Image (cartoon, rainbow, N blue to C red; front, side, top):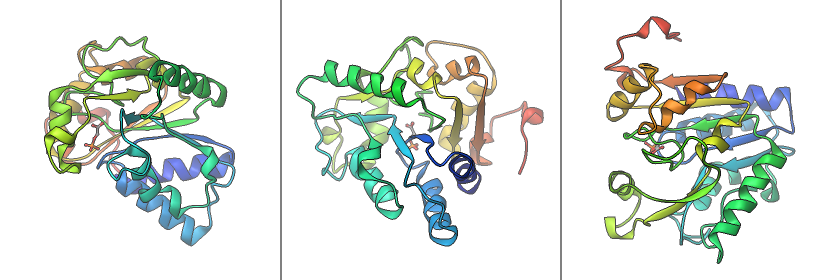
Length: 238
Ligand code: PGA
């Protein structure tokens, strides 16, 4: 899964060296980033002209906080490739004026234009931090995290209490503006979400279903994430 996802990103960068990559955090994309780093070392694929935009950031965490998404990206990708620091964009969760920060970030997304967006999926179907019930028209905004999301992410913190209650996230509409979208799913705990996504029903309470409105989405899932998927005739096996 990770190897294939990395191939999409690498191909994009080779085709257009000044690509804008939309990136994600969490457990799912770490293998993808490892493959990107390995390719950079072996084949010298260059990220010098690449710009990146991340999906989301916790409110209240500094960039140097080991649980912030800025820290995650530096550690898992940016410091291992030749990308310029000024070309890596992540919402500022410490901004004094969070609404102004959301507008600034949305404007940046529009100006850059994302070529390919990497997504994970929450067990509740969230994409970015767009929790169930979020309007599909949303732009970058502040969201209260669902209790289930805070619990799922508590593994990165010392305790559940330390998981922030809110985050800045690209909205569903912001995500849908990307020219191409790759959604990754790994493990049995995503099997229900992937089953629901495969049912093709559009439902505001299942945010990932908004992806059915986009013309160029690829889902890359491992065998465990496909456990409950019965319409696998549409799937390409690699
Ligand atoms: P995960 O998170 O990759 O850590 O499972 C994905 C998500 O919640 O979007």
